[in-house]
Image (cartoon, rainbow, N blue to C red; front, side, top):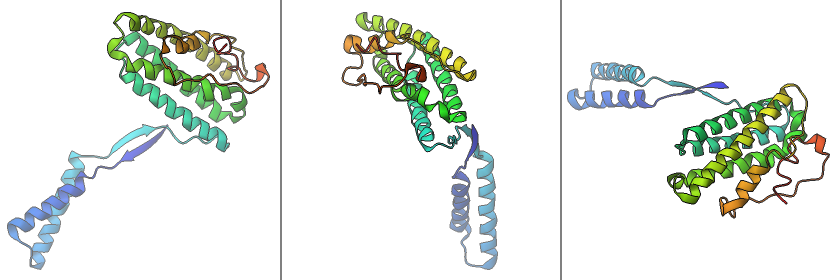
Length: 232
């Protein structure tokens, strides 16, 4: 994280307004009047700085892994996590919202590990290119039915999404633990339930396609088989 200063434009607005009012009331035509106008503008500027101080916020620093491809993928993944956060803001279910918060937090930690160790890219490519965007689309679809989740069929969908996110949490925590120990694990088919959720009920119909994964050794990509059985 890095700090970013957001400057307010109100001090300049108040300074201009003070000069305008002074000129309107007293007029400007002599050297002393110009000086008083400057004083009025300065007073307006100071008042503006007091009433509307600059804001200091923390933002994610641009990734600096040293690998342009890794940095681009991290930025793309951050955008997907921002979309997940926006979907979460529309979801009133406290339990589901808590799950989504945990998923987002864990994903960001995984991205931090990738930035620190860019050579992990080969092992996290499926996570970045399929697993994360698929989770985003699932939650986007869930947010769209927020007003209907307590009605019949959609209520069942909500329950199943919660179960799927439980699997997401388990898989992510296992992966993060492995990355923290600088090793990779094969998560087998723990994410099959998420794929089945996506395919069932037309929840994300015409939005999500199961891609054909590139051939690679399974041990090199811990996410390579996460959706394997569900995609058959």
